[in-house]
Length: 182
Image (cartoon, rainbow, N blue to C red; front, side):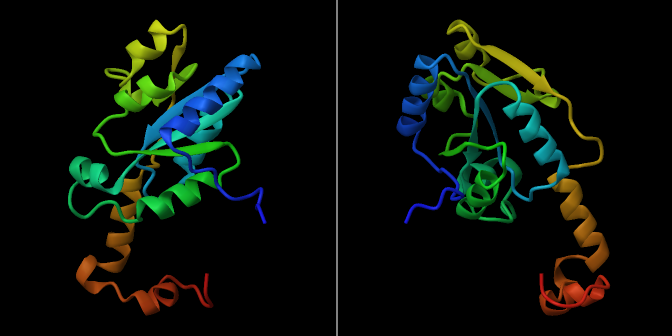
């Protein structure tokens, strides 16, 4: 049985076929990318903005190895499979595709999205910009949500629980004044 609510995690070749199908129908594929390790309001706001730029949204998701290279050995917190499932379950996200490189340039070259969205904090360098624009597409920069970041979330958790060595996972819910299971 095919569950219509299952996230669509596709290969680069499958995403390119979707892009071509959308293009033939006069519709636009939007692409963005990132680690999306611990989802927060800033991520959801960003996904809503990106999806509004076209007819379907594909998110290029950094593999676990590429996150470790970029953010250090303690990241990601969540595995690429878990990150893809959660991200792909968001209403604005139509497709998720993994990439293992440090930046998505090669993936963008395979897909050729109509619109490439990045956060304004990357205005100085948007990987794949030249490819998208050379193929008649456009790059759109999204405003960031102040005070919302994965690093900030991790820092707040560590501040509340006193650092890695002091976290008691079993009592974490009650320590924060919560009861029951989530």
